[in-house]
Length: 417
Image (cartoon, rainbow, N blue to C red):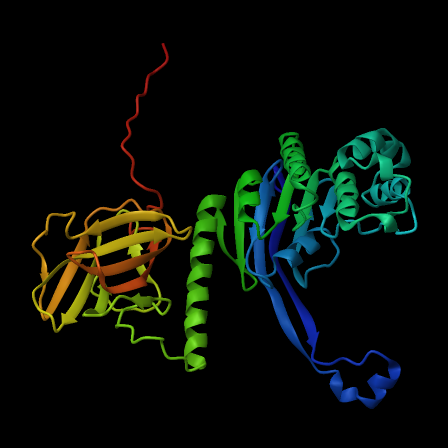
């Protein structure tokens, strides 16, 4: 193992046998022997990463990607089919909270039993007992049988034991939602404290915010392989964007499979999630982003301009009005807005057929997903045609690899005397 590393994972693989309908009893196995059919499913296909001493990393990915399996192999609950794992120091795991607790024993007795599983001697447990009790805030219930505890009380005690064993490496799997809000805050503060004291931490969680608060690095696992590793905020942004794109594609495919027709005839280039309002006396005929008609996600680069074009048609030529465009983020907050009247085109009138293009030369939209609402209005602000969620935008890193917004800044460098 290299100096400074606490964990080294090298090209590990793991497969499982997934039985279709396995017989349980001897009778079933004899009579229904054909049921013992199974398939081999590869969960990990060659994972490699290092974790430095005192570093905290997060493992993210959708269900079934292999992140929890990786953690279980780090705890030696299971072993890889190939590859190697090296860990330096005492390991404490929070994979199954309360594993080893006996329901008929008291909380106090279970502290001794559970702490001994983590490798502490009775003398060491005696020295830490009060600290564990204080952290769990369970003193008045400590001599009651664990079976009388609520699930929240049970988890509090288990967390208090695991977090107070002075481990060199702490492995955590989806358990940071323990107890009430104040206790969760206490858990986070304790994790930060032991991290400062040199404990190496590996966390598996679907809560990306939790990982960002504790970890310096995130590893995104997909289909048994590492897709991306790096600073949590950037990796998470890419992960969320891709998950959203896949969700929209899947939704679109499901709609097509069911043979659903849109409630109203939506124009080409329009998102499948769009819905129409207004009297359609002037009607949007098509929508394009950078000259393309796509009905799922339209990709635009951060820092780079783009344009949105709208074709329209009407039997009422000469109607005075305006065209408005709103860009809204995932939280529903308005990020950008433009309309022809505000921008000086106060004499604009709709012709029998026409086209309007909004050129956005500069924008300050962070990487992420957005929706575009398009509205055609008359002079009295009556809605002639409106397509809410007309286009879905996905802002991605630009061709130079920039992932952050520009800022006006300067440096001042001085040499020491």
